[in-house]
Structure formats: C-alpha cells, structure tokens
Length: 290
Image (cartoon, helix red, strand yellow):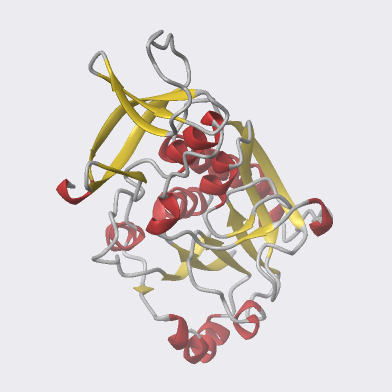
C-alpha cells in the first residue's frame, strides 16, 4: 500500500509513525513550516521525515492545487491527513485510489472544525477522543472509519487532554489498519445534526468575564492554559495571564463574594464570579513577562 500524508503536530508525528510501522510506503509528506509567532511545543513532522528519509514539502494553502499533477502521478492508495491545517482541495482528495482519510481530535460529529480539544474543555465536556473519517469537501463531515474515547478530568488542561487524544489517534489508526491494508474502508454514518461546527480561537478570546460562573471561568483557564496563549484578566493597570485555577477550596471566611473580579486574601488570590462563587488562582503572571 502506498500513501501520501498531510501531517503536523504530535498527532501527525505519532500517526505517521504508525503507518510506517505497518509497512505502508509513504511516497510524500506535506507539512507546515513552524510559525515563528506560535509557541511550538509539539513534535516535528519535518524532522521525522528527515530521519526516515521520506520526501516532504511545506506548501502554502494556495500552492496545494499546483501539486495535483505530482500526486496524481504517485497514484497513492490512500491520502491521510493528521492535524494538517490547510483545507485540502477536493481535486487532491480524488487522487487517492481507495480513500482520503482525516484524523480529527473529537468524537465526531461533535466539535467539528478548529481547536476541538480546547472547545470541548471550554464547554465542560467529560470526554472527547479521536475520529478517523473520510474526507469530503466540507470539513469533518465524511463517514466515520474509527473512533476512540478519552476522559477529560475536571482539572485537566488542553495540553494534558491533547496528549491523551494523540495516543487515542494512534489507537484508532492501529485498529483500522488491518482492514485498510486489505483495501477495505469501514464506514459508519457521521450524523452531523448531532454535533456542531466550531471556528478557530484567537488569543483575545481568552479574556475572563467574571460575570460567568466559577466553573465556566475554570474551564476557560484549563482550555487555553499555557503553552496555549492563556486566559487573562485586568488587574492593577495591566493584563495578567491566569495559568491555573482551582474550584476545590476551602475558601477564607473573609472572602467577599459580592464584588466580582480579583481579591487577595491571606496572600491567596481569588476570582469572584457571577454565581457568587470563587475560583482560586494558583498560578498567574503579568502578560508581558512571558
């Protein structure tokens, strides 16, 4: 079996390794150049390709269409996309003789679109996972090929959950590979009406609204905790990144639950929220120091 792989991030590294281990011939990898403005805390697909002597390219989104003749000539059995960030044109998807498959970091049809792990935590979900599905023109809309679930603990951050999703993605690939190697693609309907589509997130979306409930604030902090840009609040004339919070208590008796926002009591820092409950801020720092 031959494949062309579009890959980035830890999921890209881990799933590409799983294909190599299964004996699939990787003819070409498409990946991204790291963004100098982004905190790159994850594995490098480009470095893996250099180690494994696999040819790779880092095209811009506009350059993908120009690669169609080259990929048609390779005539891959499969196209795989593992956390690749550009939309892959349908003409490119058609180059796969058997199927074009994408790994998505949620339990489809839930959390289609961008930043699925972050959105799941932000919405207080207790589980998420990884889903391998057939690629279509619409993102994350094709039939489901395989799925694996992971739990989300009440205090786990996006990075911690992403680590679990990364392992789940490999489990899904390993589970699907025996059939894929025989040229068979298991399919289950992706019922889009049972989920929603979410867009990307920007650093400014991390602003804490103290009018929200304590749990909503805690979930936001977990969802965007460093190495993501972080939740932030304004205090004493500057922005502060709130990196870690707790709902557990016990909270001091002299904490005023009426005035929303930051309170410092007995050398502990608290955020008073709209439901008259507090979150304790365990770790924070001025935004311009990191």
